[in-house]
Image 1 (tube, protein in one colour):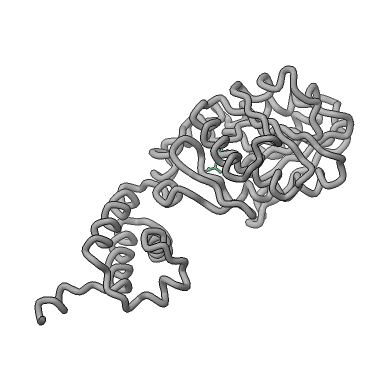
Image 2 (image 1 turned 90 degrees about the horizontal axis):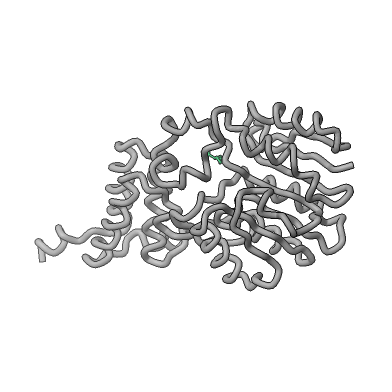
Length: 291
Ligand code: GLN
């Protein structure tokens, strides 16, 4: 009996022990991450996990948790371990085949939605779709829209396709394997060309968090020497694929926004060019509307 109670570990004990350890290893938000990991394992949302703090953890659960926890300790991103993430109003499957959808990209979708709401049965392109986050959340929030999603990676396209199928969107989205705009040959014209392209400077990749650097696909991040390779290319050529009054909307990071806007300007094809800041106040999107 005495021995038994010494062995008994409760949910809260496990959370405390694991999150203290994870924090010591330098992971931010360790407590939250441990709660999400354990909640995932036990099939409990956070409220119900809190309600279960006093409940004993079985040996089986402990072993199962340990296996997941070890992966997180090795800095694998939580979203890959759990296998899904929320993005705006949809839940998307996430694994190492594609970049994890980021909160800042939700702003791109929101901005595109406002624009597409004014166009009839809009057709848009999502270049470098990855998990399909941009295309699928837009299809979910604008039921009139349809999409062509492009990626150079077969793996990413498979994941995006799985996500589209899970939503029942297969008849509203076409998938094309190829390199950005060149993959749109023979498709369109589009009401909007949208992209969260790779925009990390090649030289900055080594300094990224291990979660990103060691686990997410490098070709989804590397934007060349100044990070502008894809942004520049899209800004130069997107007009060929757009309807009159169509939108190009690109995600980038602070220092790249003005340079990208300048490229749009130089083409002479756009009437409205705008840089949009994210919730943190950083320049994050470049918008351009075709003449
Ligand atoms: N915001 C991402 C990151 O730094 C980069 C995404 C991208 O290159 N498109 O983690």
